Image 1: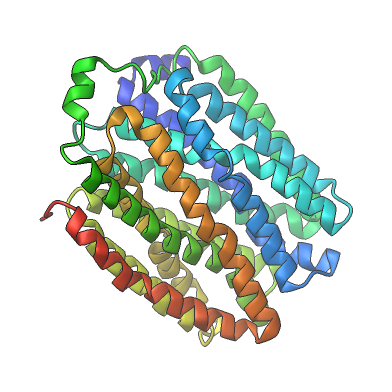
Image 2: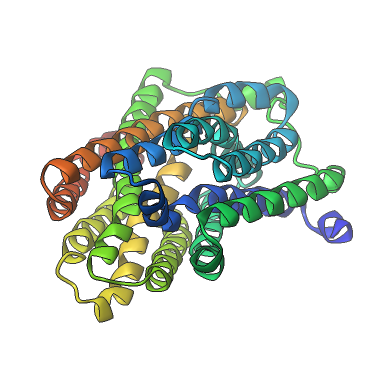
Length: 398
């Protein structure tokens, strides 16, 4: 392993390391999705409580993203990424041991904090490594890698949770994560990712924004679109398993469909990252989010046998947008400050991640699950006109 990293170009080592950390991080956070119906039944929870658990776990990861971005500019990303995953692994162990809802909620909040380093730091270092060429493709690749972890989550749930329960499954994944992260610590010298602050004054001059106010306006607009995208993505992942459950599908069938959903998401992230180097961001948003809105509503009337292709298409639309948005962040900020601005971007995204499951959970409890999915589809479609505000901030693309 060490020899492989040593021989690989520096940019590729950065991409491999960031992608590997992302696989584990997204596995940790996606594992809860296929386990939610089991947790709900085991603890006799309402939809609102289910949404709260998901919101707290995901939302906690946004708390430390901005501090992590600032700190990375002076100490580098390696240790922060590794120890962040160690933190979440320990959080899974605490969640597995939680006897009641309140304890699970607290463990989710504390454990989720460790995820704050992953997205801003992996995105910033990969965007720096590929600044000369292929930045969108590289950011799309590390984004795609996270969905490999998401694809593993329902497989793990299908293999172990059905027979061993959700607690044992969380415990096993937490232990596996701790072992891998401690082994990764010994690769530090081979994974020479450098530091974002290691820039010359000449580099700083060439990276200075020609119009800081215009670039900041573009960054703020992009962050707003990112909030809406994160809301759609998180809410869909929380409530789609319950749509499947309402069709009298077994836990194994639900896990299989979630695997297809995450597989579609992985494909969407990779392809949209590649497309981001060739087409403008707004066009990609319209294609992916238009598809998502349609698929969410269709999920209510689609028979069980036809859910498989629908889940693949939903995943493509649901997750593909993010690769284009993440890569576009780099267009508005200099390389030496990307860690902190990616921290700001991902933190604002957490607004949608936290609020959406709560709102849709309340709608489901007050009205119905079907009403929630229809409202979710309409809200997702609202991203399309909102994204048009980005046009004036972006350079013309082919």
